[in-house]
Image 1 (cartoon, helix red, strand yellow):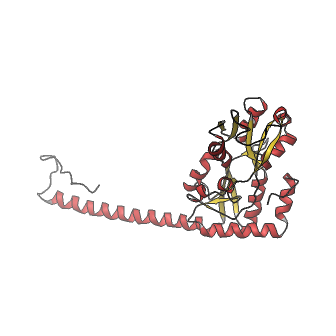
Image 2: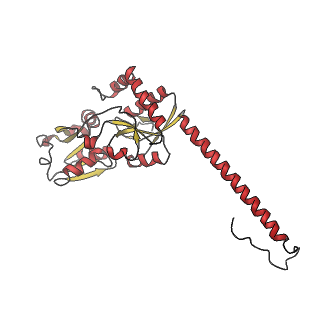
Image 3: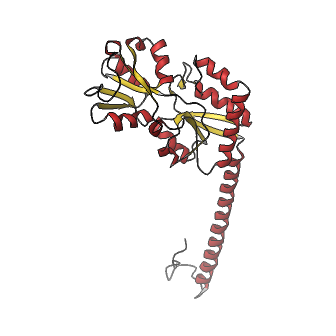
Length: 290
């Protein structure tokens, strides 16, 4: 577009006076440059308008996983349900925003947030130092320990690295539990990671795993309510190492969206104060998650 002008071949019909073509092409090039400049300004203005609209936060796009019951999952009608979803809807109501939800593979949630596919992640994501290097978080909206589960006949094993030496232990990939297992148990045991928690639980029930580590609020309902969960029981003690399991679970946000973080922080305080949080909690758990 801005390169050397191409001359018309000599002797062509309707030839022009020497210099006329060059002058005309110069004017065309100038016009083209001006048109491009105007187009760039228009594009920049459109982008700025989009950015301003995004910062208005009357509409918030929320990403979640959709395969981590009872926190987030798809029901029979392919609708997102669960504790995370109900909490997110309550927070959006306090903010006064219209929220839409999308399901995303766990490992793609933070990349999708940073790529502006979502404005927030509400997916039982632990607030850890590693993640805080990349994204921001609201204050916590719940905090629970992790725990080990094994087949009932192995209930006397305990859950120390020594007790589980030589065993195969499962966790969901990309989670705090996975990192903890790899770092603390990886030298003595085989660590097997799964795309979803359901897959790990099913392999435990079928005998392809010796134990599973996951959030206590996820494994307890599985043990108590799922048919496959009848195979197994809790072993050892709750796992609370803050170096791995962080400061609780928060809403994941882009670092530049400090105003949205402030809105979510206030909304969490509001639903805690007016009883909304307790009512949602009681739908899923007989104990407080906060």
